[in-house]
Image (cartoon, rainbow, N blue to C red; front, side):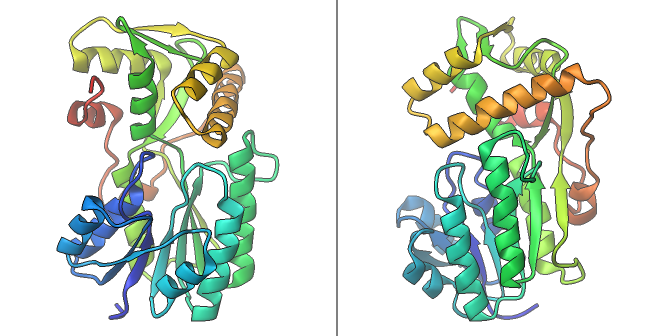
Length: 299
């Protein structure tokens, strides 16, 4: 491995899985040099500094700060949050990486990435991947499904009087999920093993689970009878915006639930657990119940 640092964006960790934080911590555990790109300096960035990471504060949408962060790195982990600005951030990172001569970049995208994907964010992901390809920076596309962390948060914020109210369809709706730590392990494998070919997409699905089993899992972990009540897309959208979910994420999730419900109605369309996590990440994926038992749905 090069003695130059690996740039990890989103390294402080946000609210949507914290893959950047996991990647930075895993790389440091291997003794590899890390340059942690964070939005602001606080106790989270101080934790990274204590692990031995070089911490730089910057803005995805500010070319000057991105260019400075990219200079001299051996590889980049690019993970932009589910909010407005993805394509601008992609163009800025691609230009900076190309100027710096970067030859390996792992970008975190959605599982479905195509110009006719069912949500606006997924369609943006497709064009983000194309920009990184055009920049010739050795892009590898890590396509992850819904994080356990995000499903837990959605359930937690909608849990009232032992009832989860969400627009997920009926008990048979199947939801492909994955843990953020498993995604991070795959990202680390792609960043550190140069035998993986650039220009390749790596889908990451840890478990495909029915809505009935999701609700039953919450009930087993909490030790009480948890029920599910389906609401309309508009009811959920209004409630989510009232709880200050950003509109970009709300639009993406609304389209995602519609796609899952429609997929359930077409029995010939399935999504399966991918071998990527074990082959590249080095261990079997964590199950949804293992994740829920180790987290705090009620908090």
